[in-house]
Amino acid sequence: MSNTASGLPIGRGLLYLIVAGVAWGTAGAAASLVYRASDLGPVALSFWRCAAGLVLLLAARLVRPRTAPAVREPLGRRAVRAGVTGLGLAVFQTAYFAAVAATGLAVATVVTLGAGPVLIALGARLTLAERLGRGGAAAVVGALAGLGVLVLGSGGATVRPTGVLLALLSAAGYSVMTLLTRRWGRDGAADASRTSVEAFAVTSLCLLPFALADGLVPHTAEPVRLLVLLAYVAAVPTALAYGLYFAGAAVVRSATVSVIMLLEPVSAAVLAVVLLDERLTLATVAGTLLLLGSVAGLAVGEARTPAGRVVLVRRRPRATAWSRSPRP
Image (cartoon, rainbow, N blue to C red; front, side, top):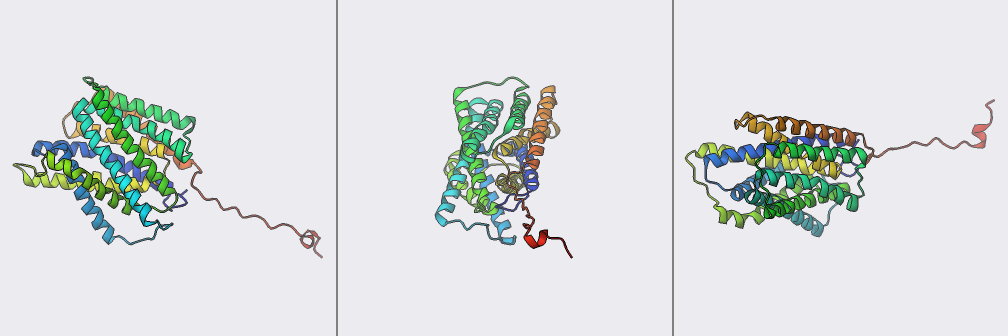
């Protein structure tokens, strides 16, 4: 089963998204270690993440074999796509960091990642004619419930209206990016590698002035450790994860994409327990199981859907008078 435009099998697209979601979850733990090793702020870290990721994506694009897209994309449309995708990515990241500062990590994460699947499901229904069905809707509800239990289960969350609005803005940026990636992927005009490069170029330019105000050059007593951490953030949860995300999001239904990306807080919670010595709670276990069950259910349903598959039916030749007559 494959997407007719890009040729990427849906099963492989699902695998790409799962790896991307898990890789995104490691960014939080790596960022915590960066903050411990230096005075680098969150916006400056986001800029370096995008800028260094852009360099790695460009290097990978130079060595990979070039393949022509199924449909040649006009230059003007390509520029619009790069600008809108890059701006959506910049809004997604920057508004999320601002929401964390305004209302705390727990509430910002729940509102941003929880509103994403809802906005994407509605947008996909209105603009892409993609239907979730009852099973898909139940999986989305289960995933959102798991997210709430996982992130808010420890208590101590403080809800502030400004932070909630910023988190909703972040979710809107993520939703626009996901829906457009899916829309352009259906006609085969967008190349995942080129989309990643162009999006990160636009995002880096958008984040640069904010990073300059935040403090672009960090001060640290452990420069080698800091460089290793920054290299990891740029390589794994950025260049690799977003490259896989843009490829998978082009062939998988948008609502399914948004739920699979909820693997990010699961990965982050596991790393927090294993590497950062955080306590394993009943809420962490219950939320993780709810999320994993919902993701698995949607992934199985997506792999079985006939959407995007080309079925060739060979018709039997019509019988003629001579073919119906008995043979001598």
